[in-house]
Length: 330
Image (tube, rainbow, N blue to C red):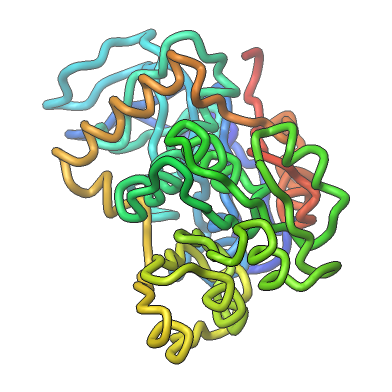
């Protein structure tokens, strides 16, 4: 038996229950993991509320973790029991779930843990960096480019700051209030704009000497994309990778037309759904970690027994970096 988190109805963090469940043996193409740390993602809160995919109740939850291999299903090669691994979020939420002491996951979602990282750090690597890599692969950031990053205190926002600095670009962190500004600067932001305290467009134009940001990497969406477009440089690219606003996202037609902007959506599966691209970006991330250019930022850890409190903190927007839940002794 293993303790597993499930929920039986949509709702707030309180619907998450720790239950005893027989996990069993992995099937063909599957791996059973002894989970050591779980990286939380905002999509999981949306899933719990019934706003992202449609859960089948009772539902498992969670899709990013680190741990050790316990057992291999038929046809699985390249791993061995006791090996330290990471679980990537490359399966549908609820189909599998890693909020558990032991979890069965598809072998295609398992990677060796990066050398030198603790279990907590290993649970905070792949989703942020694969997502933020859009500014490199699509945005083509280079020396001197200004990169505007709304919701910069998220794990993806911080990963984008690190990638921008590594490329020689200039990351501009956008956050609602200036209370997070010192921490964002400490984590590499060259400039910080508090959007509820100053005029974003005017401040970005001041910072960029009237040029505007060549790349904007936005997880919020909604009507504010028009403001973001106004803060951009000519022939810039606006990448939208989320919809935290909960509102429809209009196309900023006139700003795009007059500035010849490109506007496109982005999901990390654009990389990990394609084997050649996946291997290349994985190796870049591993190199960045090994050389110290990249380092996962942990906002706070919670023990497994406090999964409800961890989700409450996830939705509080207080965090700077990744929230990780630890399972047993890590």
